[in-house]
Picture (cartoon, helix red, strand yellow):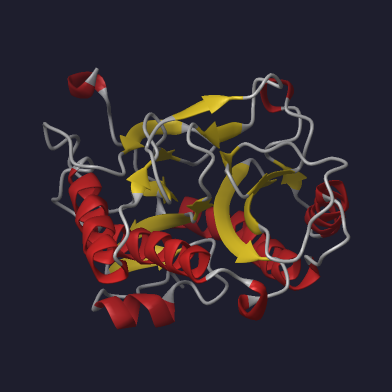
Length: 280
């Protein structure tokens, strides 16, 4: 399988179109971050997202995807990914991962955030550490993306970040087994696979114009998970909590452009010592 994967590239004009979809996703997630509160349902969050995306001229990527019934994936506490929004009521202190995708003029954006209902003051310390470790791993992977690197090599960078965070936090963080990032463009999921842990060989070589979704998913315990009876929601086997962060990223002529970050990734890339290079 490894040898057959290709790494498609986009023209600058196509990346500009992807930025439109990415901005819709990024702005939607910022709205949801401020909208989430105790007492609301995950379905209410989903309705906010659908209205926002359609109001911006986009179409939700997830809605109807292999029969999925939500605009968002909303995963709470021990749910890692693919939580179906509905009647579940959010409670103070819940750890919530929100994954959002949008299509604009045929091009996709895909990103995820993790938040605590009620804010940091309502959070358990270990939940904040878990989310921060996942966020650091995301940006470590993004900052390592450059022409010439093998795309699978990002997995080692992400894993090293997770291990370092675990040592600093006195935790063992599990990297969710069997779930990865992906290429993205005119489809939500495309080649290549973007791993969250070290694998061999190094994978297809990254070229200018590559666009990928990088998305580490970490747990406070085991790397093992299973699907619930709804055939979507992925939960940790040990019932420990999980976090998920994701961005869609383009490799441009001068560096990187984080298409789903409202600021294009300027601040985080600078902090990581990577080049911020938007097109146009």
